[in-house]
Image (cartoon, rainbow, N blue to C red; front, side, top):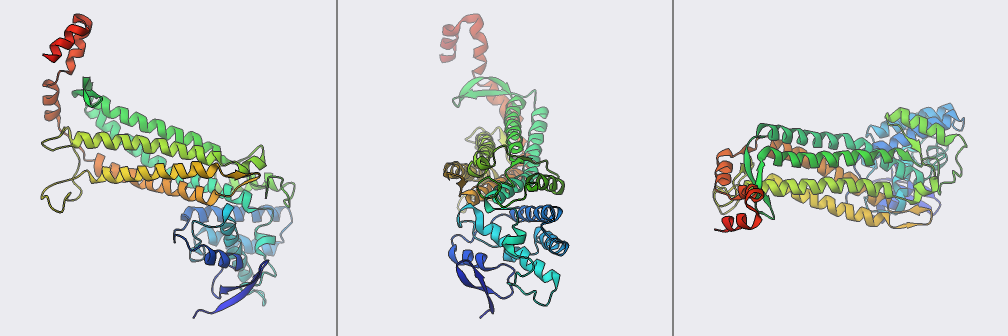
Length: 429
């Protein structure tokens, strides 16, 4: 049996694993919320550490922390950012509202490590005589302004990888479109032969859709740079120094390289999660474009004998346990599942954002968990599609030309000369 220590919080004594850097409130949360064994993405922990590091610097500059406390918290927070305490930051994604458990988990880890760094004789885990989780690490803060700010920061840190993945796919599609810009094929509407189009023009339309969604994501992400830090519990700034907010903004901007500005109404920033909902909508747009791309490529790849057969996707694995030689569009099938999951995440985020009561929305942990998951699987899914489906995609030019030559889609061009009715009779005959 593992040895334990006893810590005390406002509810009474709590048993904590002896070697753990977390404390009483985290222990309670670990016991209470054994739900999914799913944990928040690593980038969230890094972002939370940056808030604690910036806050410590701010409070030191305001002379609210002495130099010993500040140096110890600074070192501990940097270690936290670097992932030194990942085994102690293991709360379930489904937990008490607002993210109080996340905030206190970080506060306790950093406080215990800071006291250890000070090396005073009394500095043992759970003894917060010199650096206290609430009084010092959480000084000038509340879960209600910390967690929404951390969530914004985590998204902004995760975003470049997704944007680069989209751009890479756009570039591959652009190359494909350019290479086949003069290859005429049957254009289809309602899945029926319609009018001529070039293969390049068709592919470029898919690229343009992705570009539009990428720009939509970029546009919505700028709204996440408006933060409510310094508002503490309900946006009034209670228990924060009058200069804390502006100094915190300056320090956080310098630390992260992201230019943050303060929300005009800090109470609204705590109770209104619409910026997250709107950002999720931009991911929904991207997922929809990817679903359309996937569906079209699968149809173009259908066959190889009985389908359209306009393209051949690179084979990545056998497609059947019973039919020898069958090859499926496995990469696009995986992409489709990813996109459907993202649409599900988006719906949950929409509903969570509707659950604000008075001065607080308590669903922030669920919102950020879903958003970070959506960003991650979209990034990986797009990279997979680019490298394993689009990169070595083969265009079957002969089949495309034969299909076009045997089609009646050129009849539309006769309508201005012969009239719609006569042309329709010719097509029918």
